[in-house]
Length: 523
Ligand code: TEU
Image 1 (cartoon, rainbow, N blue to C red):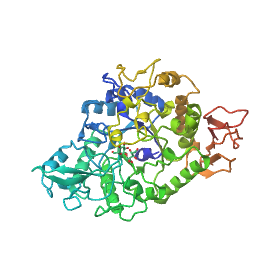
Image 2: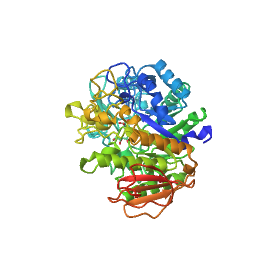
Image 3: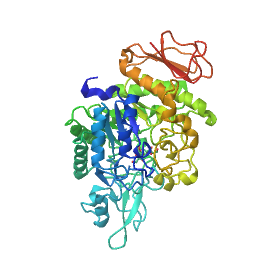
Image 4: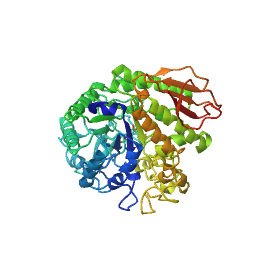
């Protein structure tokens, strides 16, 4: 790809910094740990990394509650370490992108402190979404919206004179007050933040909740009061023009720095809705969660791919693919029938070949290349503050965020010199360490390395379209214009392969047949 468009076919590796590698021995990953593992990332062959939030934060939502967007949180290091990371990553031809969290701030952000101390109607309050409550005494929330993390999406404040006061909007935790994107000050501050990091050599941003920054005019009650952002596709009251205007402003800053890109987290319920938010002249890319949420079922996988490609084709955008991230169960666990992680791993390996065979940009969540499952953590180990506080009954997001196992026979497996890691690493992960897999040509790590290398170096991966083959029940097969064929067997019996030379398989063939829960690349 020309330098300016490198991101259209890139493999981007999501680093969840607190779980990647700990160099200062506090049991939490840090930027020095990322630097220490750049050789590993080079060996994996990824084009870029996406750093989940590293900005100053009280960590109410593990960094997605930013108190100072123009500094590194001491938990991860400082700006000098960050600059060294960018320099050393670039030396290895690895680009560095990072999370931007513009929809809200931390409640510890200076702006919000000023807003709490200021009077209703003040300029300080106008940076956020403060409203008077409903009911005679204002004791009811301004509308029926609920937070993604449960409970009302509004928190009432106490005014300076001690009386119950206005309410402020928080689509996520109360510690994450939503910014008022109708206020030009908010956009100006984001421009300053973007240029601050781009001037330090950052190659792009992942924009958190990028479709949520403009709220429905008048903040009306909604039919879907919870997760309102996921239901924007069919509600004309969502101010999509407002979101496009913000995306265009973001793009204008990016265009001052050639070769950079942004990817918007547009988590909506349909690809049709997705297409309403992603424009290639605004967001370079939009996160597509279709493969991160679909069951291991051939027809559903094919439908997910077809509808995702149709959505991006509709707006002329580059498709993106991911099997997991820091918010959803890992694919090994998600695909495991009745908790059978052996089958779950086979299926995750197969789906890795499917996503890496598709046209567009692929995002790999750290640990997917090791075939990590979700860790089944004891209740006392759970530390996702907003998830726990919101009374979710499921086990939350900690299971997919456990620190990576690097080497050695027992926890902390080289992640840290401190055995007391922020989340415990399961002792039975010894076979999953990088050290255990690196020299094993049949390991998941070796499968990812081979797949990324082939995808990067073989001309058969060229072309932006997908042509579907007829396939046995429970299977799919598609071809890229360059000649690559990908066959997936999601049935429970071995099946014949399409004609062609076998380039790579996720599980060894059985008598020339593609086994159940496996995928193959052919040319
Ligand atoms: O998530 C946005 C988002 O879509 C959430 O509603 C997601 O569905 C939720 O976390 C349930 O898994 C982004 C970040 O990825 C997430 O980690 C943050 O908690 C959230 O924004 C608030 O910043």
